Image 1 (spheres, protein in one colour):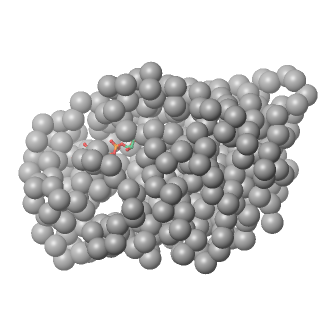
Image 2 (cartoon, helix red, strand yellow):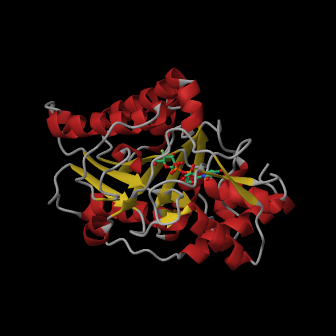
Length: 349
Ligand code: UFG
């Protein structure tokens, strides 16, 4: 089986993807600088998959650290690039920090792909590239609008760099280089084992970790940001998707890069969402009814920069990657809560 390199392999989506790749029989090499994750997550991955893989500490912004891993491993057919900072609020406070980490890291990885002859790359992009869309259901061909944060900018620019690289790079050595960009909508939930999930640092920015921490008593109350949006109940609408479905799409994308005779050329983009939007109030109701809990919440003012409503048209991923969604909204809420409880009793240290 081909060997796949994952950057950010102990992060939220990365760790679930390592499990999915191991279960699909791939050889996996993981690198992470552990700035937003923990080495012990690698042990959880091995425990769940019942398989071993090679895990390294390396920071992509230091070229030599990546080179060391590639010298040692050799023969990698595809890299999945997760390693990036992703907190929207933090990025507005520290834009250069985000540009340095996300874009310099990506550039070093692209150069390494040329140098070490790694032909395939899967890139973690985001629905943030659609900005605040006029048509709330977006296809991959919907216009890319101004993003609201430096974080979003790193995804939009990251995509543009990769596209230019594989489409207009003339040197022979970039020939054959192919990239799949996956635009994630709102990944939530955790591994069904309860042993793997998102390790939130400090106060969560995102809705579902805030819900589970409130239910756990770690936060007093959830504030719903805004109740006067032009949606069915006045709260924002998003396309929440289970992290294991996102992970599976990466396995499908690796297979696509491997086998596919390039009908779509060296650059392809796919939306990863369920195709169904949920409002914030619907998410709260789902959490309460699935887990038989009452959540303490109230309405607060709008959060600056929030998109009103966006959800995916996911037909291209279904058609070209053969991607099938396996997890329901109930699964998202059940596994998110199981993970929060597991973290309380047996935290990843
Ligand atoms: N929300 C609340 N209260 C909270 C947290 C969130 O009401 O305490 C609301 C938000 O206002 C929003 C919805 O829940 O309406 C979802 O918010 P998240 O922060 O969970 O997700 P976002 O859609 O804002 O952000 C996500 C990713 C970003 C990415 C963005 C692209 O976290 O990385 O999608 O649109 F850039």
